[in-house]
Length: 366
Image 1 (cartoon, rainbow, N blue to C red):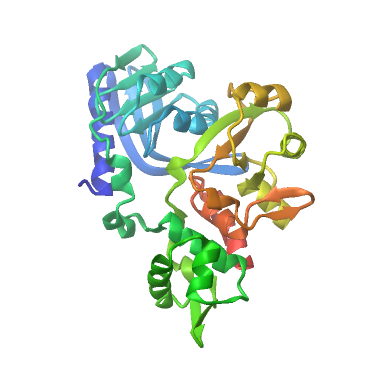
Image 2: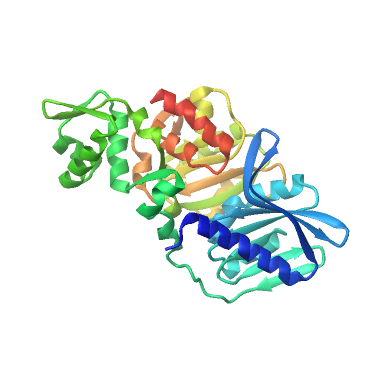
């Protein structure tokens, strides 16, 4: 199995090889993990390549994706377009283990590039044009490998299973409750054996305390000495939409519509944090729903579009792969938001370093 650094080197080598094929591009410099500040936000690109074409200098901003599915490309698309619009003489490229014809088509439609390490590619800038397709996915297990236990420490994260997350949700939602293993397992909807084994693991973290045969949450903050992430985000189904309205207007419209059709929902990330801390209220609008809605219904009733544009607000409507995300919701100003536990997972797992920084505010509440 390839380790994470080898994957990064593989991406870099693939980009170099493709640029060499053009015959007109000279690589001047390559930088890794470059932070690009745009207005009130910050975006990290994994590799930034400075190139020269004739007498012209150009910057290639490359973002690595663990999954190159069309839905993931669409979710990341607005960031790509914003960077390309803000950075003069720049070209944005997505890289992934595999990009399908549909994924490359989305790149083509939006004047950005796509390269995979299976052999497929689309590049079009200046007079350079490369389009390669038809290569099969050489890394069908790559997604699983990225979450494999041997890679956890190397990635700097610790991933818990869905069932373990359900136990943690229950403990964090009822911090004053003294639980028996049987009672905790039943409430968290897991087996007694799994619950017992997980509790034994938690004892070494000082997250819980045990007295008279009962378990009680002691300090959930101890759980976050290592970054805790939800490793089932790749199973989420995300529909992306765009709007010129402010976040307040968008949220109000969503609440009214979802309430009218009786669709359970819960806002997360920026919207949830703005309601809790009453400060940040710019950026994407992210909302979980427990059932899918057609694009036509969303566009018609919420007056949104599926076409990204500069200065748009991106709305991510998410059908989660883990239904326990809806456990223990909060209601603030008549708006449903997810639990502090889920909000922390979402904030600390975001690609934007400024968003990850906001996770500290939620950690202090827990």
